[in-house]
Image (cartoon, rainbow, N blue to C red; front, side, top):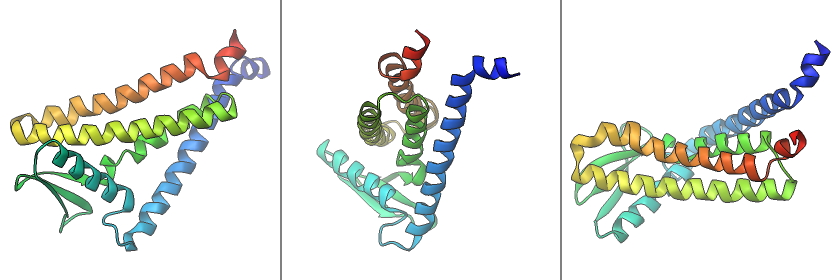
Length: 183
């Protein structure tokens, strides 16, 4: 049994680290969401920020956008040219995807400074691409409402998760200590 554990030590370390970081960050995020229910930003600060920034980007593209608190659920209504198109919920703010990304990078850590910079720059990139994704999704819905399901369920998740996967591949192949230890 000891030989088996030694053989798969790096895999076991990866799994334990990933789970610990993921659970820790998810619990902290849950506390943040619970705490933010009483804040002036509805439904929470990050979701509100994503909604407002999406509105600004849509406006820059020549449309007239509005975001309003949804009266029946914790989300922001996104309206383009007086047409209610989508709602921006907590799941749209990219925090959960960033938690997944950071957990993987921590589990496959490299040098501390490199790890921190990669996590930070990757998180900013994920957040930015998510904003662009929301903008293009909203504009696409405005012009092609009958494509809602494929846009929301296939194309736009593929963009965000595909990018995270590519960032992981780059990290593992270029910066991770795990690869260097096994060479």
